[in-house]
Image (cartoon, rainbow, N blue to C red; front, side, top):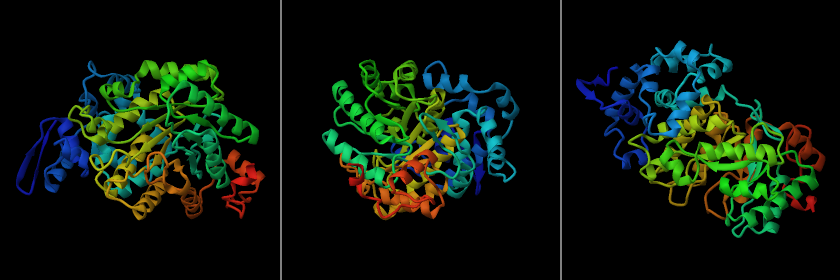
Amino acid sequence: MLLKSKLFGTVYHFKSVKDVLAKAGEEKSGDALCKIAAGSAQERIAAKIALGNLLVSDLRNNPAIPYEQDEVTRIIQDDLNEQIYNSIKNWSIQELREYILSDKTTEEDLKRISRGLSSEAIAAVCKLMGNLDLAYAARKIRNVTHCNTTLGERGILGTRLQPNHPSDDEDGIRMAIYEGLSYGIGDAVIGVNPSVSSVDKTLRVMNMMQEVKTKLEIPTQVCYLVHVTTMMEAIRQGAPTDLVFASISGSQLCNDTFGINAAILEEARQTILKGGTCTGPNVMYFETGQGPENAGNMHFDTDMVTMEARTYGFGRHFQPFIVNDVVGFVGPEVQYDYKQCVRSQLEDVFMAKLSGLPIGTDIAFSGHVKADYNDNDVVLMAVTLAGTQYWIGVAGGADPTTYNMESSHQDIAALREMCSLRVVPAFEKWCQKWGVMDENGKLTDLAGDPSIFL
């Protein structure tokens, strides 16, 4: 294993596989602040050369955090298919890149080798790709899941309807749901971020959401994004929910701060399979995004891309229905501007898809990221082209609880029309029944009129 390369007469030595990974990544403020990024563009290229010559086995044998110290590492390693791994372990990362991008390599081929790739290997090949490479490769893969309806089929751009309310007022949430539905939003999930995370509030909001779903016969999933332990207690007390939500990360230390571990997530999965209102088998809703490990000094000198790949390797163990990648939420201490956010979102869609996850995307530019709504539009177009499986739909493109820039209901309609994408079929038929969509999946003049549901 050679941890050095020569470029323009200068020999660059790297301390470890982790060091090569960190320095080979594209510029991110989070890595720079952790003092693990390349010091120059030339050093970054030298690291990419060294990384391309490493083997798939080198990445597996040198995880970001040792097996004995970290639950995430153990799950990633233990879940690998050893037969598939042995068939590709002597490939260089450069050879892996060429295989992924070859027009002869099919979706089935990629899904097969993914079962033998460690998360570090997936992060490594990601770092050798340009933005167009990432979009081209990600677009090849669709990961189909089923809860009450089916998400991820080719030609479909789903949406999470996000009807947040600053005080979790049930009537306010209900009206925001009606508005989103009138634009054909909500086929992936209707998911509310809580302002108050009590069991009592969870019971009241979930009863209201299930009442709306049942009364209007909406073919979708509903979820209140409280902590997993709160939702489990609410389910035991009779709360009707289709999904259980959890934020997850790429290190056990960071997961500890989120209040989760593998045992808790598996308990939650079994709890909702037995006591939820879902059909299944996919019943978990995960939220991720580059940066929390690094921002909280829980990254073990590992870069953000590799930590995010590990998050996906951990998450796939629980067979989630959806995974939501939030990019701009933490702020400029992780992603300084929209250029870094575009790169991160393309990296995440590619890595999640290669990890076998049903990835959806949420820009969520916080107010102090160097970005505006024009930048928001660029991200929407680029990542839709890469084949994200759903976007967030927020009234007016601005969340009333977090004040983040988001994708609006109208943005989603425009993206579907521009890219010839449709709504989840069962939901589209429901929209046609209410007259907000025509037989071609286009919005009608009734779109945007929530009074039709009153």
